[in-house]
Length: 309
Image (cartoon, rainbow, N blue to C red; front, side):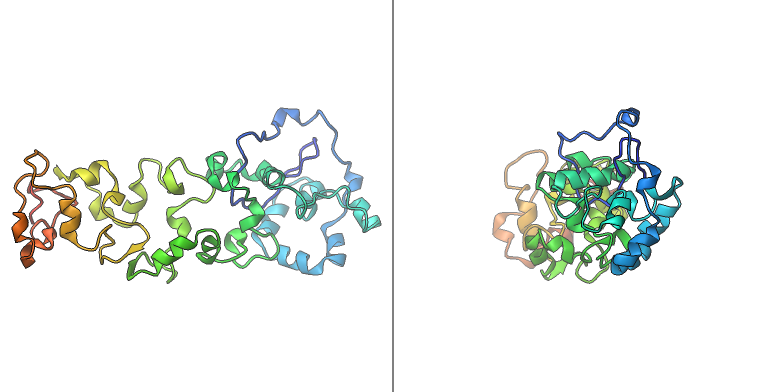
């Protein structure tokens, strides 16, 4: 937690969303323009514990506690006041809260600015300004709480995936499908694939080189490179054939049956990318109901241009 001479406190809240594009972070060079509170305006962190024992105890068990005291600079940069502001006047007169930052009354923009004066230095928040979460009016404390947190890691107000389902209920329905990524079971978390603080990829996907990179973290055998590439895999990303959350097909395909998916591209037209498909009259035969019965290297092959084994 860092407090500049300008009097802006650096919060240690882990931000769940970002600043709107119009918000400016105070520049480091502007520190001397407005004198901040004097050292006498601060009290020891233990002074806060006297009236706020529950909040102090929860904070002292959080990741903020150790991080706070690892930073030199005294009470202005450590403990409760690094987030809440100079508290000497409040201790002298508990009704006087003029020197404290009012988290419960501040706008999402103000809360985010307060937190990001510290957290914006982290690479995790490099895309924070592009986050739809911020543009939707969420603040850091919409998802995180320094005191009433349910998960010590990241100090979330609810554990995943319940926290994400609060705003994304339609995704919960997909994870209830017969075939799904095991998020509800706790094997995966939403944040394994998505970055809630913003990403340069669609849907907040955690990938820098391409949309599929996040899939290949677990499905490396599908990545290649292969001598013979299946064009949809190479060009159109995994989601051209698969649904990422859940679906009725055991392979999480976008449609119920394999042949329906394949024939959406491989029609009877005589074009170079769809040669030699079975006659449509044969679709009722079992062997043609799953194209991958024969073309079982459909993601790519090093030995056969038709993706045979």
